[in-house]
Image (cartoon, rainbow, N blue to C red; front, top):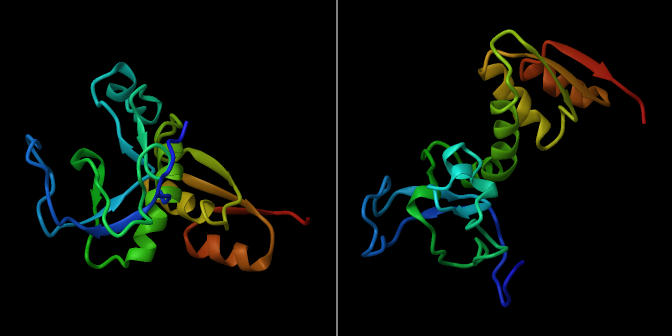
Length: 169
């Protein structure tokens, strides 16, 4: 459960201004531009973490829910859970990838699909769906995009969807 008072926010981009004295090894350095995801910290040593299911770690910390989040001017983060952000990617675009992008990527990653398999993506023209289309194509998958409306059809086809299933609401 969340602890209160608590500063919200679960996705953000910023610059590293300090690294703790007790940090043994850091994949990032002062001045690096990084993203903070919903998953703020996990033990990285339990069976769930070792299998890639850090979100289910019994010691998980969640940004804006169990630890202060990204709505603050400064955020304490754990070096193993921040993500380097390339300078060419604007902060607003990066922030959405840190939530919606991670969500859709993980779903595709654990889907047991292989190159040339078909995936059906309901809501393909939406906030998460349009990212899933791009990830699926990058993974070599064939995409059936499912959504409604000509605007979304045009979007998903421009992102590489192989087939379109439209419906009316």
